[in-house]
Length: 311
Image 1: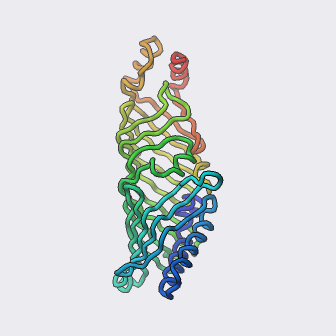
Image 2 (image 1 turned 90 degrees about the vertical axis):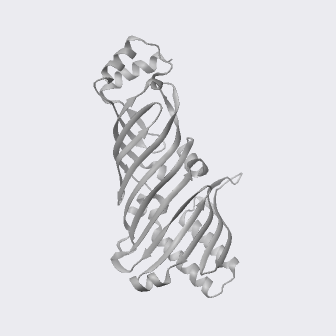
Image 3 (image 1 turned 90 degrees about the horizontal axis):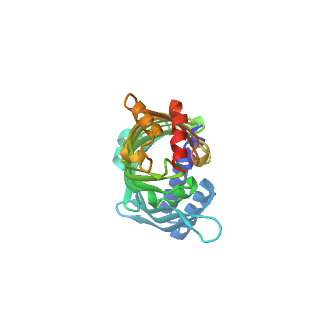
């Protein structure tokens, strides 16, 4: 089910709606703000118990905007390391649109560091469920410590894109996700160097996402780098713990001169370059998201020879 598939985010949207509804009701009934803040912290803890949660302030601002500030999740244990932080989250019911469409609608906006996520929530009953759509702008991957630490590698880049997620709580959380993602000026650390490269820098990476149940399909993936230009597609089979999700991607790359930096012009290098004049370098990435392996298909043996020459 998708409630397991897309981690705690998409899998818990129905629960978040319930929490949001209760919060609004509490505010309407003039419950103390401190009570609402504690309720939110308890709700977030139930939603993602791996972290300890704090909500800075809760306020109702004109015209009817619910504003939450300094929502932060901490890794448990010594040091109280910040893992997730939302600087400001606002929710604003769209009364007239809700009446016309006969469904509850609300706009939302999250400020996360230098970036933001903003969009619309539509809630319907029965099997229509709920739809969340949004636009992501300039989220800095380096400002998401949880992602970096769970993957065990440094991530840099500016994330932008758009998405639509539909969740049907009446069907045990069945959901569909559609999205487009772009990362600019990116850099990914490599646990196992590739031809002495310990990180993958790229100017731009794009991909189209289609999610259903536990499967996330990646299509029309493109990467532009100083090391190579490449394309890819494939699937990610999602798990409750996102870092244990299973990758199965295939693609091709066109290496550039910097890809071979540090290698002498040996017979093996010349043979490698000669073969790449007629075709692109194929690759397959499989395994856990936290520690995947890469295989170069029919070039595997030649690639191993190049790796040995660097030692």
